Length: 95
Image 1 (cartoon, rainbow, N blue to C red):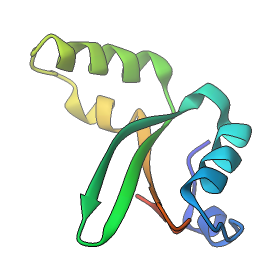
Image 2 (cartoon, rainbow, N blue to C red):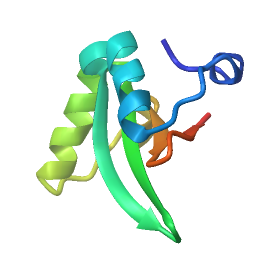
Image 3 (cartoon, one colour):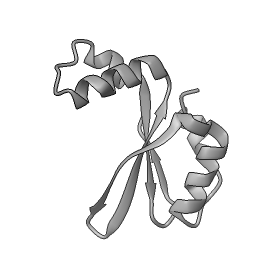
């Protein structure tokens, strides 16, 4: 389910964050969740997680909430893929 560079190259062009978000939500459903948003320079960027392994993702996320140290932090980081959606519809997938 991870988005490859080839998959990323085949994504349609979007004209807004909302259109891009709708595309990913339709494709991945509840496995596509917003994690944060920030203004960087002149761009508002929305950071989403594409959950690849929900058990490891939610276990790690809950440990972070409890201010616990994640022993298997690499497992947690590999349980999702970050997708950045810009306000104007541009996309950046973290590989």
